[in-house]
Length: 318
Length: 318
Image 1 (cartoon, rainbow over the protein chains, first blue to last red):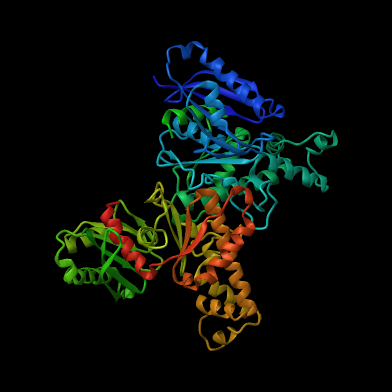
Image 2: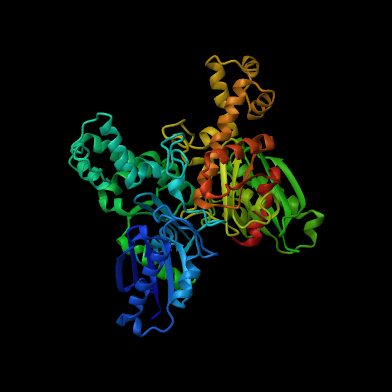
């Protein structure tokens, strides 16, 4: 059995595991990132997690294990570099591959977290059995990964698969990236929460007003819960989120025509409450003559997808 | 030298040629389609063009030539079927491959015209030397073809590469396809002309009013010429066309990150008058952090691209 170590460095937690080539998780562990303590500290913590995994019983039988690592943000994969990361402060041009190869004496394969998660879901999650799949990860931002003919498509300069920054509303809401009207500015968990807050502050009624009155922040989960109880404002916001996701699905369909589109990330835990309105709006806005719209699925691996995909990426040597 | 016959069946003309595997055109010919006389007639005309090409001097030295055919519209390539065609009335579920194979005793490879044109430009036109390219053909509609890692990407059900029907303006102009806000509804030659007519009929001043007064139709070329002479309305319309094309380029970049985007079709003859404002708007709307936006190029093969690509497709056996 071929096994690799997969690591997913996130803004709050570093997750890792030993993963077989079919995506079976033999061991896994999670430690806090402590990102505020700087790059070197996070790398040291990552190395300690790798060493802990190397000492597990499952690792015993395996000689040379490949090591795959995922980091959120802009990566130059071929140079082994994290160019910048919105969730890891101070990470600018960090030579992650060189640092980890020196510390672990293993060959390290680096990718961004969204690509790894897509590969994980493709091999052993919601994308099993298809040859082409687009994944949208709905969290603080909107990450994405494209699997075309069984392989990750990264683009000429590794800038592809950033569907969160396709423009779905010309001159629309300002996005954190600097553009206006990005999908991420409407359909991330963060935007869903912020749009709700904005309208409540503008005087709209909602059961969620109490949250703001207590000085707390509204979360996307609160919006979903309020929409489930038919709070009018939450329903409207949620409808908007789903509508923009439907527009993104239609554009993906006309561009790539994948076999399925998978929603992942925190907001995808809404399950059918997300999937059904998106699929309904796709059917409504998508012209019949183009045939069936793509199937919308919910991710299956949860927050393990990142390290599973990182390990698979290392095993594939891609 | 490997040579194939390439045929491009258009709404007004059938073009064909003998083409080498490097895209050199050894012979070529064009005949009127006479589409109004029905499917059978057009197929007979196509066969006569093929036979004429077979009798040319260049064909003499070649024994078994592959035959590639392009038709505008919705194709089921694997079944050899033209499902429907906006430019060829009455073409519904036409088994083009079976009909032509019977008449010519050759193996026939069918694709849609936009895919063939993209392949032609990729091999021996504006896309030479790259590995990934997106082509947008700006004519009556907006056709497109995607070359990813040197191969045409058609999608799971051959419905991909229809960028003309990505939605660039939610709830926007009605498109011929039945959707609203499609790129085609703003950035085709046809839409550019119609949007100008609409505003003149609503009372806006323009040097092009005289065309309507004479009972004639405005063309995209007239709009371009009027914009070159700084007619205010024509400038506004052209700016809008270029802005929607820029939005499409940005969305292509964030999705696929190709090495270049090629504009083809009648409206691309505007050359730098099209390329420069689109490239400028891309630079303006595209966030710096994503690196360089893709290069925008103008197609080089003109209306020969379709039959050249059809022949290349047959030679590649794709």
